[in-house]
Image (tube, rainbow, N blue to C red):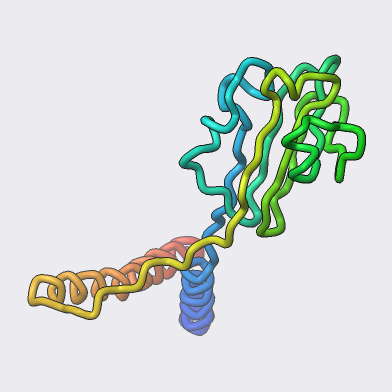
Length: 178
């Protein structure tokens, strides 16, 4: 029985190291779901230009429109129809009837949304620019003694963490065999 345990230890270590490496390499999700208007939602008498100012909308983000489903809607229009509040020829009607509509921002471009039925004249319109996600900041090439110590410490932690997991898994397997 002890021989069987000793033969399985290298396989368990390989599996643990592989799982740890996969988890470390997984990409970070970065899409944001924006509730249009924040707590006010998609409503009249609200300045959506002010709300969107200073916000960065990136490709693969989502706009979430919350509104009274019995009265309002969400229409994507071109710039001319946005400026004139013309809802006669929308590019897309995002209204699902639930009053909780989600619009994927999957193309880098300008988007124009209005509410028809006259609500656009009450301020229910928003224009946003969707841009590419900026690249992550690059590491500084300057390394001081303090930074070198930190790097060595971090490297030691990175090496020790899988070892600790491997020891724990080995101990657990050993306990389960007894």
